Amino acid sequence: MKIFHLPDLGEGLAEAEIREWYVKEGDVVRVDQPLVSLETAKAVVDVPSPYAGKILKLHGAVNQIIETGAPLVDFEGEGAPAKPKAAGSVVGALEESDKQWNEGDVVIGAAKTASKTAKILPAVRALAKQLHVDINQVIPTGPQGLVTAEDVKRHANQYQANDMEELHGVRRTMASIMTQSHQEVAAATIIDDADISELVNVDMTVRVLQAMVAAAKAEPALNAWFNGKLVARQLHQEVNIGLAVDTAEGLFVPVLKNVASHSDKSLRELINKFKTAVTERTISPSDMQGATIILSNFGTLAGKYATPVIVPPMVAILGCGRAREVAGVTGEKIIARRILPLSLTFDHRAVTGGEASRYLGAVIKELESG
Image (tube, rainbow, N blue to C red; front, side, top):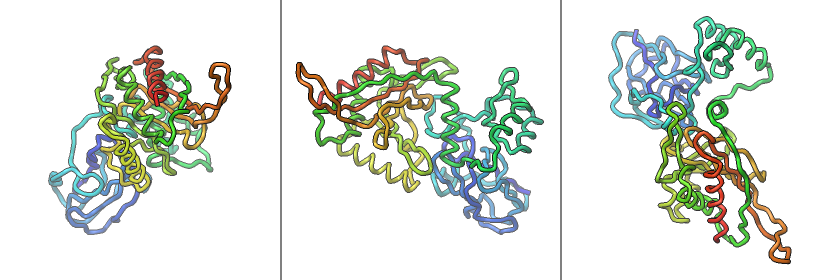
């Protein structure tokens, strides 16, 4: 029997979720014939067959999570698969990789799971499987982070209900990232308003992006990554801004690389391109990597202020609320002014309150300069 193990899908991710099997047990397939559709953190990938022959067993059902390196398909016969010729993105050959997760890597949507960091005895893991409990979501209470049987039972009793919907794909990834952020980041948020009364007939999203670049030059500490294990930071020269995009399937964060190098027109074209690609689920994983700071323009939907959540290893995220008219005082006169509410969340492990305040002040100064 030949066993085909799930390869590294070329994104450095530890797992993938089965969306659809194209074959069934007993089928005879040819080399490079698509076997299964898998969903990683942000991409849908078709995995081709490394063998020609008869399928004996399929490992995993639709919506099941398969870890990289785990058995995927059993084939009839002996031998090992030939090494794939090239890495694939969405469709095509897949390249084996020995890349290890590094906290310095930025892959939006790829977070370390509890199963990789928590201590779990085999009997407890078996209990979790029996109770249909995702071990990644269990809060350990045992010594030195050990997940106990009581932890698993408590989680099962608390969360298992007939009317609960299990999260998959992008939403499941988002849940994992937010858990990681809550556990690791020392988050603090400051808020203020920018007077944008003089900004008429301008693309505000583009203007805010440019203000973030100017602020990064004034206060580089916010355009950085932080490694909690090493207690070290990496400041970046280029400002690569992740732009949070809300969809029915979940949150996507395409990355605008080297924002300072773009004109107003090219920035808007790139934003529109990414939004279309996200909606159609055709965006490349490489277009969602390498962010050094994030912009959440939640005000286009609703809300004035917020406490946006940082995605490690980044140290900051800027949120823009809904612009509104207010009464402003100029000398002895009260006149209508248009303001843009801003919320800056920063990782207090790596950024001081003064640095965060200066960064936000620089954003406001740039916006108010017209």
